[in-house]
Length: 214
Image (cartoon, rainbow, N blue to C red):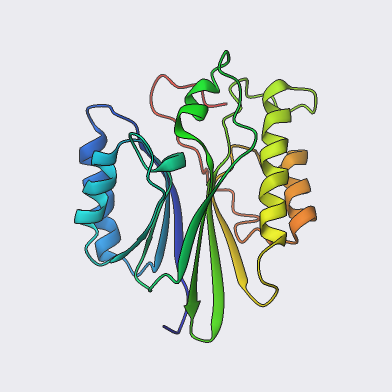
C-alpha cells in the first residue's frame, strides 16, 4: 500500500438500544463508499453489532478485536483495508470502581487495541482506545474520575513510548477529556504525539436528546 493514509475514529454508540442496528448499517454504508483505509470504532457493545459491522463492511477484510464475554473487549474494533501484521489488546490496570458509574466501564474491560501494518516502507502502529468517562464533567485535578483517567492516560503514554522508534504511531479513540485540560496537555508532553485536529473547533461530541452536553 502507498499514497495518503486516511483514518477515522468514531465512538459509534453501539449500545443495545432500538436504533443501533439502523445507525450501524448507515455507518457501514458510508464506510463502504469512502476512501478511508483504517477505521477505529469504540463502544461496539454486543457481538451481534460486531458481526453486523464485519458483514456490512465487506471492503475492510482485515479486522482487529479481542474476544470478550458479550462484545469485543473494551468495545473496540479496528477495520482495515490494508493487511494487519499483528494485533493485541492491553487492558488498563485502572478500571474504575464498581460502586460508581464507572461500573459500566469495568464491564467492557477497557484498554488499548494495538494493531500494526506496513504502509509502503513505513511501519505503522494504530492504537485504538477508549478512556473511562468522567461522569461528573469536572476535570479538576482532585476529582475522583480525573484521577482514574490520569492513570489510564499514563499507561497509554507508556505504551506509546514502547513502540518501535521507526514506526509511525497513531493513537485514536474516545479520550473523554477536553483539549484545554491538563490531562490533554500532559498526554502530548509525555508522548510527543501531535494532535492532527488541533485548532479544529468542530464539536467531537454530539450528545443525543436527554444527555447533558457537558
